[in-house]
Image 1 (cartoon, helix red, strand yellow):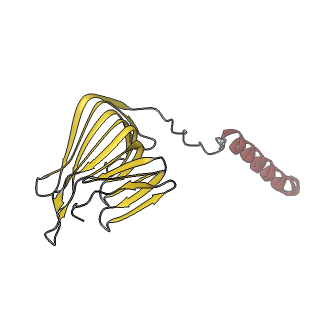
Image 2: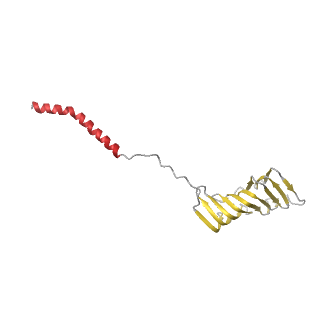
Image 3: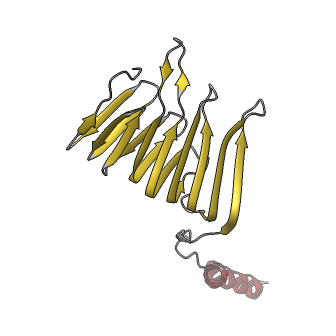
Length: 204
């Protein structure tokens, strides 16, 4: 009996060591089998490449009453998903404002944002607003802007350019090195070398 007790006492001395060994082996196993977490995967850099093309196309948009709001035609178009822009060759645009007044635009190339509210016209650019009668009953002559670059904001009815432009309003004619025009506020800002030719007898 004393021998058995002595054996048990000696065994009890080694139990903590055995437990520590088991824990060490368990820790080693966890380290070996735990997947290594590498650096977070970075999102692929968006490349400026077209995801679809259109040829000899016409795209029309309508308002909530079913009235034609805009029409864009071109020989070819390329859509770039990284910027959500559309590049159009030989573009023809018709846009109607809330009063139904028509604005037309043409150019060798255009870059439009996703909803067509902002268009950059490049090469032989031309924007024409038809003559209209305003709310006071006065006739506003037609206006035509021409240049190598015109930036048209369709919803806010603004046009600007950092390059030379020519403006024709009725029979009046102006040229400038750069321009900003706000049709809603009827404000025209011409910069640089500004020249104008006014014809008498033209409605204001």
